Image 1: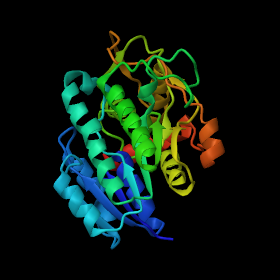
Image 2: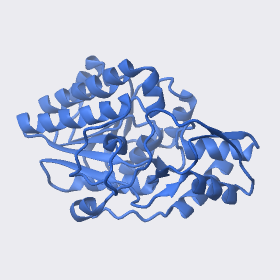
Image 3: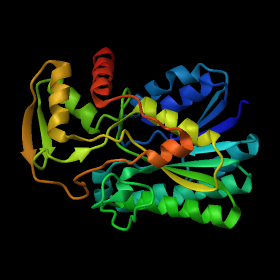
Image 4: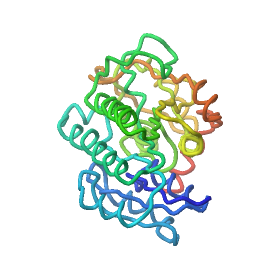
Length: 317
């Protein structure tokens, strides 16, 4: 059955892929995005070109903190699902301007929860982050782990968003899923993220910055697997849940660079720099709970994912 779905941040990397998939499934999609200047807004304009041609797609240019536009959207449609992806992203940038992250990622989320509550939205899906695990001594990270040491304002804001979601479930019985994404990559990835940035710099023969000795490990998750997980979270019944969406495999930064070198056919010039505040030594998702509840089963290995990304990069740039 086709539903009306509000996607916040639907012109971004993950959001634009999600909107396109929802449209192919026959849903009516409302995209609210503020096209901010965190990176070149022309990239977002390009992301939504295909969706804009679809009759079931409606774009709203606005901010989740703007109650007037939320009232307009929620009063104009009977919305069954809210998928809340909009956020100020980036761990390092949050160290420079933590107040902006409080304003967007916490206050904006609560504003959206309030409007969804008043309009009896069936399901609310909140995009959280693996960064909420902080420096977690236990690996892989599971949803039942204690998460009391976030080490960046971005991570803390995402954890606060989860707590507000839990509060709204407790107070009002809202059905809410918080999805902890583990380093998502693929076509349309934001330009400042490691895989996109490194690919461009290696391709152009420019020096790439590596913070630390390159031994940090990350769980990189391909965009198609993330979209599968988001869609699965819309179809199962729950009260309040937290789900890891990762690949459940790790690779060191040096190994990642070697893989990109191999796919591009060029050698990287590496400049080693001191470790940065806010960076964690490892992210690693235990997806057994997501598999049991959502049937989530990531399929794209890092080698195949990088191959696909480099092809997209060459085609696009």
